[in-house]
Length: 449
Figure 1 (cartoon, rainbow, N blue to C red):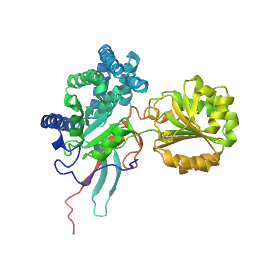
Figure 2: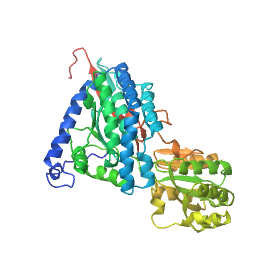
Figure 3: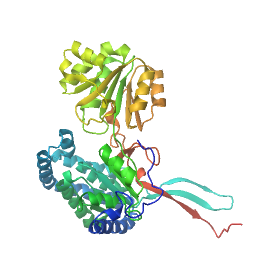
Figure 4: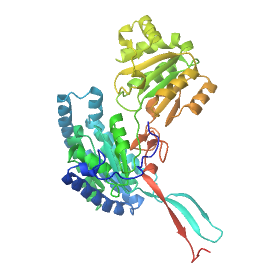
């Protein structure tokens, strides 16, 4: 997986690349560029708002989403019906679903942003030089952020709220599977902004143009400052490879739970089970289980029984399948096949292996991790220290579920994504990660010798 902020060294010559705007219908390019120019104008207004003004806007947006709950649920029902007709997987349908409770939870996430500090204007560092010049590095908004994502309408509201709080405008290119849901949500958000006397173009849905619109968005360099893809591996890697706008890579999650030799059985079962089944369709759900050989006999039978009861199919090596048979749940375990160790199942499936040592577990993670979240269950402090020091991931858990890698759980409020790269942002991205900095230099007429 790429681990850099992806900024191509040069823009491809017209017609040279698969996502070059020249390959996109001119009317689609014109449509996206018009949205981007209007968003740019709106971003200039947002950048000057006080925290109180932004917080009032967020409260109005939350109230508008709550008020539109029936409209949103009805629109979402249309998307779900269309998805089922097209054979959409259950995990994706779960991500797409917005019932009344989820709509109100999305609105509440906006209200939680109100309580968070405003990153804009924060002084990152500063000093006074020997000649009297005062210099400060200050956080400022990015400008215009493009979101390209799949069938997750909650992202629509989270991204809009984070953008407004951090003084940015946002262009939302959601997947066609959530078209009706996104239109209803963005309509409510734009009405709320207009009601506060703010530019509604600060939150815009790229609703037309099909896939060409996404291609036009990610090549709108100079109009869009940053693109954040959020979805499956194919979507993320396409944007990372082909965008001419700088990209922050977000998380494909092949997350591991490693049960060490000293792990307490009850803790191991709770952590592994929660990591897998709490919400299997999201990127911080566990996809791989490793169990030390010395813990396998006491941990695997109850754990495999619990996983089977939850409906999990375990793709196990020979030892794992043998323990499943002894636990009376052999039917829930199938032979592990090539590719299972690297799979992001996003379903009630889990790869599982018995390993002979912590070293073997670490080596397995190094080979197969996507760099998202890796958990160890252990009572051995030395093993925990090795895990946290040697595992290269955005989040490393000790005796805790992988499901905690989440902006809300970390206290950041709604997140715009979980970055698996190493530059600018890593892990759950919230308000500070949607800012850049500028240097402010104040003097009294100093000139350079």
